[in-house]
Image 1: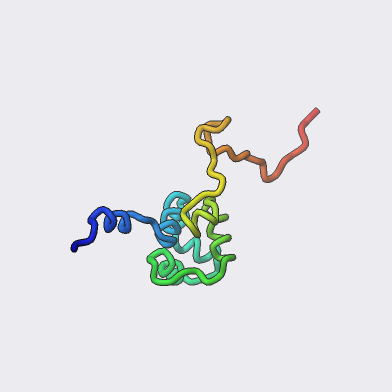
Image 2: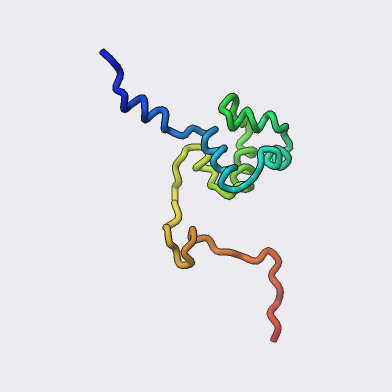
Length: 108
């Protein structure tokens, strides 16, 4: 009896953690070297993670990765979002508020 070709295709198309880490770098425009510098690890370590040879051993590395790339950590870990943003929010974006990192008092 042969295997179902559709199940093989589904496995090939499924994203694993390494795929999601690669995608987050690509979407955010962060280079492998920049991520390595941010995490304080070698470029080779990051390369091993995104090529699926090894996985980050510390959750803090994934949390930093998520913050640096702007993607939710749960998506990197599981591929699912607990509370996905509604498309076309009030500003037509992901629904997140934009805040000034250096607010100034307004002039009277």
